[in-house]
Amino acid sequence: AQSVTQLDSQVPVFEEAPVELRCNYSSSVSVYLFWYVQYPNQGLQLLLKYLSGSTLVKGINGFEAEFNKSQTSFHLRKPSVHISDTAEYFCAVSDLRDSNYQLIWGAGTKLIIKP
Amino acid sequence: DTAVSQTPKYLVTQMGNDKSIKCEQNLGHDTMYWYKQDSKKFLKIMFSYNNKELIINETVPNRFSPKSPDKAHLNLHINSLELGDSAVYFCASRRLDEQYFGPGTRLTVT
Image (cartoon, rainbow over all chains, first blue to last red; front, side):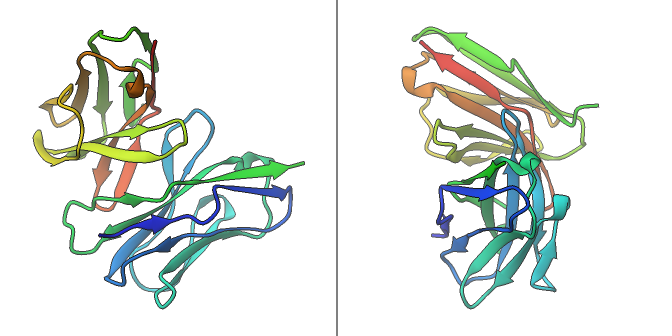
């Protein structure tokens, strides 16, 4: 069964510094990959997704992620973070064979921006 | 013009009570979900409906019963509430590969 591992439960980083949030998935079958963001006391919203094509995907708010099939990873990056990026970030995977697009979720990474 | 709305936003109740959470989406999507998010932010799918038909029913106690009167609404009824039911419950709808989440309902059972 598919699983998603977010290696860091919390990532503290100084404002304007770069950040990388790590995500690995278990299966080598073809998948769709997603990053969702949850701001404090809000629901989740889609940050970016990889379906096919270019392995470097750009999303909202200056975030990008790179799909690496050989390492089964989909790490999220931002070159310069702002205080407004403080949130919980979730990586999720969907099996291409699943017509219901059921998402398998990681445990989340809390991004803490230090002033 | 809220896309996915939930009511109530907060729900505080005592053990043993029965409560309902309502969800409505105005996006025209066919598929809707209920998720439970625990205190550690772990997100777990509970149910999924497609055009009022149940398609995903994860291991959830029978005390939880979803109801979809039409494809724009998916309500969650919980019987005999327990302390462990305290969590944030999210409704979501889906178009193709993207899910759209409601703001959540924070349920506190005392």
